[in-house]
Amino acid sequence: MALVSIEQAIEDIRNGKMVVIVDDEDRENEGDIVFAGAFSTPEKVNFAITHAKGVVCTPVSKEVAKKLGFEPMVKDNTSNHETAFTITVDAKEATTGVSAMERDLTIKLITNYKLSTPDDFVAPGHIFPLIAKDGGVLERIGHTEASIDLCVLAGLAPVSVICEIVNEDGTMARRDDLDIFCEKFGLNMASIADLVKYRLKHETLVKFSELKTGLLAGEQTNFYEVKDHKGRTHKVYVFGEIKSKTNVKFHQTISDYEFLSGAKFNEFKRAMEILKADGGVLIFFDEQNEDEIKNFGIGAQILAHLNIKELTVISKSKDKEFAGLSGFGLNITGYR
Image (cartoon, rainbow, N blue to C red; front, side):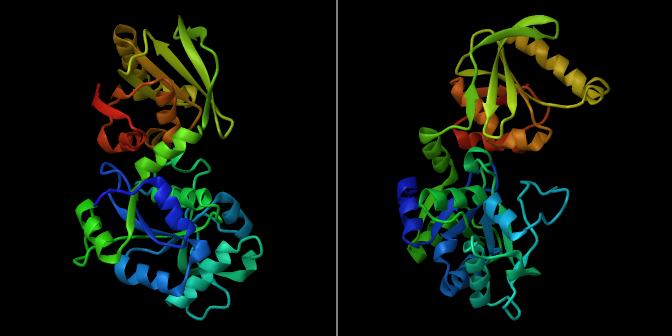
């Protein structure tokens, strides 16, 4: 089954339909049912419970979560993809909260966030809110962000409903299974990768300075300062001529002590030797969370701005840690 265009997916969401959103095979390789919270009904919720069979979640923007007092479920999120679960909730007026009708009631209260208050909810409950990144799929390539992006692009409230699709035998549905599922229920399927491309055509989260020259490890080196949508300033050092296929080293901000006292220093020294000898790009992120910068969009947008399409990553870590980059049309050809 062919993927539909993002324009079609937006139109489906705007018209109250459900769509299936699939992510990259190198990431979760899963498909989720998605529909707008604004068009939630007990029937749609029951469909998700009965036929998709995953966990029914309600992605929201940070604004919605703050307004309704939805705090993070855990202080230290150690899940593989850092899915931003909040406390679970039910509508205060619900009984058990577990029926499709009462879950829909809770979803409607969340969607009507401008009039709802934290007192309208009780916790724990049977609805799992998820907080989307401000930059959407341009910051994190996930179903949470994709569903909110689709709602916003459709002109609806930043509240959606998603549910993973599980096979009859209990295994996760992969692409071939999702094709069958969509054909069976007459649903359109779109990809997060296409949503990223769609948004990149219309917007960006990064702004480059003019090329500058400064000292790096005691040597004059060309670099750019790059500001992102959160006001952070990252630095991109350029070694030699930038080519469409090049070496790339990602480096996050860390303390001097941490940098000088362990393997980080040796890894950085090794990377500098490679970059000086063979050319490439060194990206210094103003970001403490190493997993986030590896998997999500700021780094990918920086590389795209430099017209880098294929990269050899200078890192001892491989595969899954950098998988999110492929969703931005970047091809990792190897590691050094």
